[in-house]
View 1 (tube, rainbow, N blue to C red):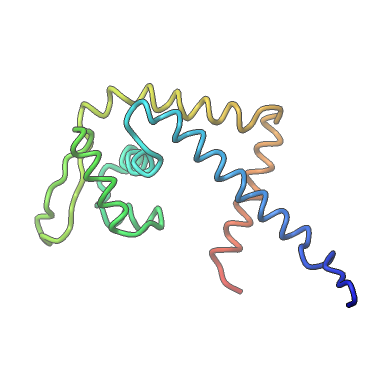
View 2 (tube, rainbow, N blue to C red):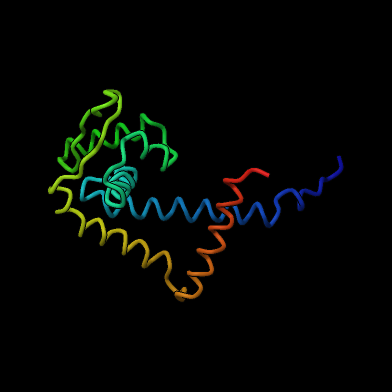
Length: 151
C-alpha cells in the first residue's frame, strides 16, 4: 500500500483560522470563569453591554446584533430579569416585542464585570504594544468585513 502525502491538506490559512478559533474559545472561557462569581455568563454580559451602549434596543434587536437565536437571548434576558438587572416590558405598538430597561441593581455589578473584562484583556493582550493592537484590530475588521460580504 502506498503512503499518501497529506502535507498540503491543512494549509497555513487553515491553521490561522484554527488559531483564531482557539483564541476566541480561550478568551470566552477565561471571561466566563471570572464573571461566574457575579452570577453572569458571557451571553448575559453581551446583552447588558448592548443595552449600556443603546438602551432603546428591544430583545429581538439585540438577538440580531449579536447574531444569536432569539431563544438564547430570551433565556439570557430571563436570567438577567430574575437577578433584577433588567426589566422587560411589552411593546406599546406590538405586544410581541419586548423592550428592555436596565435597573439600578445592574449598576452595582458593573465595576466587577469591568474588572473581569479588564483582567481578561490584560492576559489576552500581554506583550502587545498599543500600535500592534491597533494594527490587529484593523486587520480583523477587514477580515470581518470579508466574511460579512459574500463575493
